[in-house]
Picture 1 (cartoon, rainbow, N blue to C red):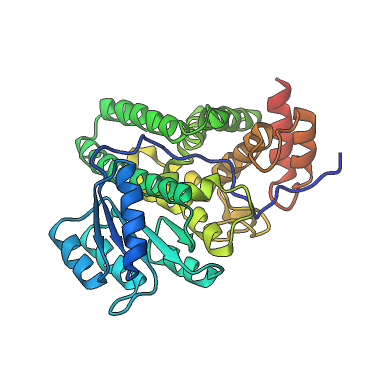
Picture 2 (spheres, rainbow, N blue to C red):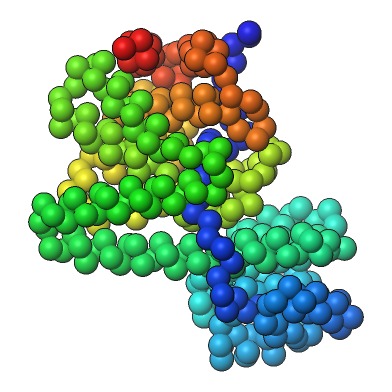
Length: 352
């Protein structure tokens, strides 16, 4: 087969924790079109959701301040206050509200603006009711994910404060379970983080690194996708190439993962490796566009292990490759994404 680099317009293979839609999910619905509000409210209540419906965005904001909903579904263009302004005010009241913005058909600029203010999803008119229900489910799950992530961060800070070896064992075990939860959405991705950790440790051993460094690299491989809790689910499901701003949102998972783990100082260099695992030798990676030796060896190793695992697993937009095909694809990145030395170490590790 012809060698080629992975398509940079697609998301790398990652997953996010998906729970059932939480009980008690309440929706605030806002649109100045009374008939549309009535139709959407009737449909969503038929799906089992409590709905507070408004045609005046200022009245809706007062209601949100009185009691924040799980999901805010709002039209973008309304007199008195736009849906984007309402969304911004609502998130100021409760940053975990799942925002869905409805825009006119073909209004991609407005859709991207909605993502910038923190929307989980956007819909275009005329709204398909099945798509509406799926979007509400995603928004409700996103709220649960954000609250879960906040609980994890708070717990980590309390645990790190105790500074004992037992805490190290407990936190690593909990984070490993958290990584498993991130992959629970699809059996197709089951075991992804464990595979990355194993491959990264194998590469490090082939390079004759110390046992301490191998363990730090293995830990980074296991936790490399923790930051995906902050990425909207619909971006991970999207089979088409991502828009520029959507891709930027996805790229944020490296920084978010490092932020979540920052209180765990005893993880040492593993946090840096997680931050850097999408950096590439030629500067085409993220989040900082580092080049060459600016990227730590551990960050390069975890990045290569993640890319290798991704190619073998396949994704919605491409089938999995055989090991021979995967090695050919990785070879095509020699000197641009990964060093020849690392690729040789990958080959050596795979032959053992």
